[in-house]
Every structure is written in structure tokens, then in C-alpha cells.
Image 1 (cartoon, rainbow, N blue to C red):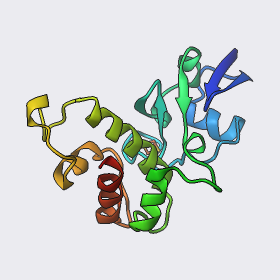
Image 2: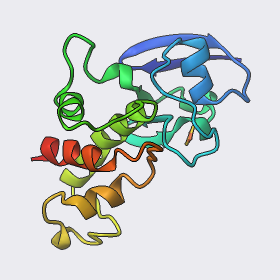
Image 3: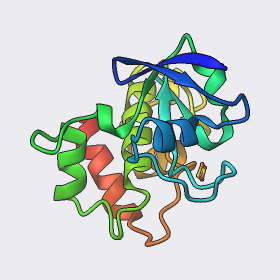
Amino acid sequence: MKISLSVNGTQHSLEIEPRVTLLDALRDRLKLTGSKKGCDHGQCGACTVMVNGRRVNSCLSLAVMHEDDEITTIEGIGTPDELARLQQNFVECDGYQCGYCTPGQIVSAKAAIEEAKAGWPSYVSPTLADMGELDDEEIAERMSGNLCRCSAYPGIRQAIAKTAK
Ligand code: FES
């Protein structure tokens, strides 16, 4: 079937089978290979993109479901020549090791910071009144959907805390 996807502000027309995931459409059809396929079943977060500002595991979602959505991938955050502040902080804080999970971590971190600033509760801060700074525990909870097999978590959390200030 024919669909139109808006990714990072650009409209793309695609002829696609209904069974194709958003992740495969982004990577294989649009050649936006920043989003990674780790587990391909919703457990690692390497494929995280934002759909209308909310985090989505793109391996679990079908491309045909997103015709009217605005999709943001890692390619829509900063550029190689001009990193976003969050990306720069990942570099400065060593928030990565092998780098495979990094695109998903950064997309997720961007959404997590925006969610916290908007007062969205978490298990650590169940109500708005509980919400203090984005401390280590709060960040760990809000980023719990993104795994790093190299265990670069301290640097990842530091980069997010620095960006959220
Ligand atoms: Fe989608 Fe792991 S590849 S959650």
C-alpha cells in the first residue's frame, strides 16, 4: 500500500507492505540507519524514535500506523557538524562505549527530559509535588527502557543531568 511518512520534517511517499515495522521502513526504505535494531522485540530501546514527541520502540510499531504522525529520529537531533547540547554532553561525559545503543539513548533522553519538565510522573516521582531535580534515581527510572550492554550508565545519566539543568 501507498503511505506518506513525515520524518524529521520531511514528507516521504512509500509503497510498503502493511507488515513492515516503522524501524525497517526508516532503516531499509528511507536509509535513516541511525535507529538501531538490537532485540527487535521491544526490550532494548536501541530503536527508540519520537512519535509526536512521545517515545516509541519503532521495532514494535507498523509503519502504516504513522501516516498522520511527526516522527523524529536521531538524524533529526543535531547534525555531525553541529551537535545538539544533549549530544555534546554525551560526548563530554563519556555517555557511551561501543555506541550501538547511543542513538536510542539520546532520542529517549531528549523525550525523558521534556517529559520531566512537563511534569509527567514516574515511579520515582509519582506526583508533580514529588518531582525535584532530575537526580540519578529519577533519570535511571525514566531511562529504564534503554539498555546499554557496555554499561555506560553513569556517563549516560551524567549527560542527561547536565542537559536537564
Ligand atoms: Fe526495538 Fe530492541 S530493537 S526495543
